[in-house]
Image (cartoon, rainbow, N blue to C red):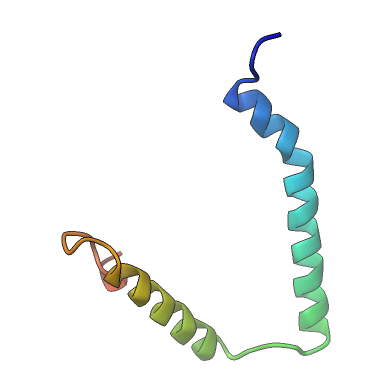
Length: 68
């Protein structure tokens, strides 16, 4: 039997990935309805710090997060 192609592999994984996305969205909506929220400024600060840390590990010729 022939090896599956990348397209076949992706189509086999699609239902489980879609179910995982649906579950993540449901959790997010439940959190929002229960008022378990964080200020956007806090989220963006954490994201910026994370991206800056990743940029430090890249070769110096790579762009910084602010350049993206």
